[in-house]
Amino acid sequence: MPRQHKTIPELELSLFVRVMWEHCGVTSEPVEGRPYSVRFVGKPYNTFVPDCPSKQVFAHQKGKTLPLMLSPHVIKAVLAKFDIEEEDFLNIINLEESQLRLEERAEAEAKPN
Image 1 (tube, rainbow, N blue to C red):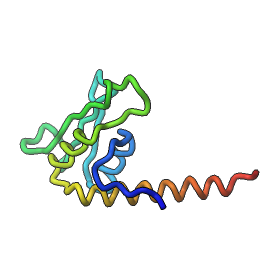
Image 2: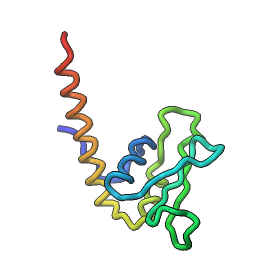
Image 3: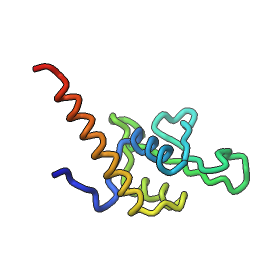
């Protein structure tokens, strides 16, 4: 049986970006000159508007290792900034990872031996 996360795990930046947009409505944008950094932006999705929530984060080791990873501490800070409950986020991540495993299994079974 697949392991279900009980605490916020370290995640690939690309997965976190996708989940934040698809499930939480928080977009992201690259930070110029820092390919290892992303700024998350909430509604109204314009950082020039007062009170528009945004949070810039950095991947581990300034992106010197691939894939780019985010620590649980960084993820928790983003969740707090956008008022996303950790338990709700864990449910989303567990669902996403289960779906990825199903897709990988289907692809493996579809390949000829």
